[in-house]
Picture 1: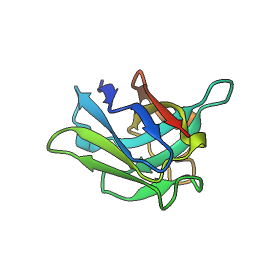
Picture 2 (picture 1 turned 120 degrees about the horizontal axis):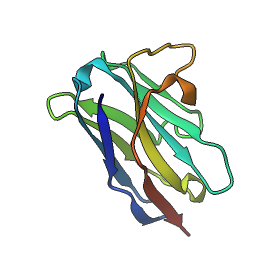
Picture 3 (picture 1 turned 180 degrees about the vertical axis):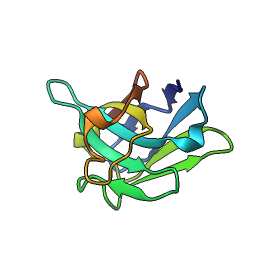
Picture 4 (picture 1 turned 90 degrees about the horizontal axis):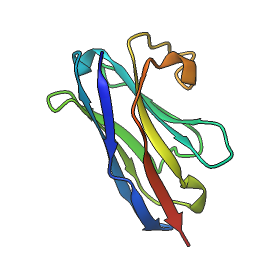
Amino acid sequence: QVQLVESGGGLVQAGGSLRLSCAASGRTFSTYAMGWFRQAPGKERQFVAAIRSGGNTYYADSVKGRFTISRDNAKSTLYLQMNSLKLEDTAVYSCAATTSFDSRWYGSVSLYERWGQGTQVTVSS
C-alpha cells in the first residue's frame, strides 16, 4: 500500500503562491492516479485536481487557471502549484491515491483508496 505525506503548506497573502508536495512510498507510485482535495472548517471535503498515471489532468472550476497539478514518477512525488491564491482557498489540503480511476468520478472522495494526513494552507488579506 502506498503511504502519502504532504508538505509545503503555510501562511500566504492573497495573490501569492505556494507549492504543495505529496511524497509517496510503498507500492509503485506511477501506477496510481492521484488527486488533491481540500477541506475548510465546517465544510465538506472538496475536489481540487487530479492526474492520471499517464498525465491527463482534471481541475475543479474554482481553481482552473490558477492551480497546476503535476507528478514526478522518478521521485514518487505529486505537486500542486497554487498561484493567485484567494481567501477562499484557505483549507487543509490532502493528497489521495487510487488504482481504480474513473474519468466520470474523478472528483469523488470515495474513488480514492489512500490519503495523506493533510497540510494547512492559510491565505490572508
